Amino acid sequence: MLTWLDRTSLKFPALNKALREPNGLLAAGGDLSAARLIAAYRHGCFPWYQDGQPLLWWSPDPRTVLLPDNLHISRSMRKVLRSDLFTVTFDRSFSQVIHACAEPRHDEHGTWITSAMQAAYFDLHKQGYAHSVEVWHDDQLVGGLYGIAIGQLFFGESMFSRMSNASKVGFVTLVSALKAAGFVLIDCQMPTTHLLNFGAQSISRERFSEYLSDHLDSANSMQWSTQPLITSTLTT
Image 1 (cartoon, rainbow, N blue to C red):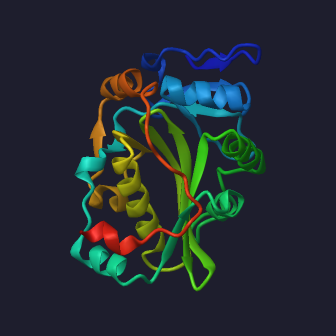
Image 2: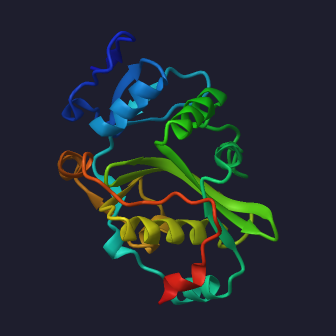
């Protein structure tokens, strides 16, 4: 049976209590407070719901992740990176990025990144947990992504692109920076062709939980700089 969360407690049910159908639905209810969101990521689940639905928490099995050492940069992407067509920054415009991610795709009629969700993650950004990647072309924001960094793990949430290859450049730049800073895993949640082409893989929920136990409280050396990054160095 689905567990309904108590607003007075930040405790989540054990991950093995998640439903098989729909895959990974763990709990419902609670709130989007910063404390609960951080507790959720540390536990191994994340919020995902549509307007009109209760707040739903998920822990799919298997889980799609990318190990930084396995990042695959195709020949065509290396060419794009060397071209310096884009400029990439971190944490320069979090609110713009999450708002752009919330815009419905051409084949969708709504968004799961509700106004309440945007406000909650902006609060996490102010507290130093949520971070954004901005991709610029001629001083225009054309792509980006955001997620949560805890210890040596980065939990990706959403990305957007208004120009071909923009979000891909942002993703490669982020993964390369995370690797250099000692991160061991990027949580991608669910598989997409886009992510699999970059080297993402599926691991069991149990293995994912082991990464949480081993690396959530480990230090990293990441510098979230708003200064432009040189993408051409990523191809060397």
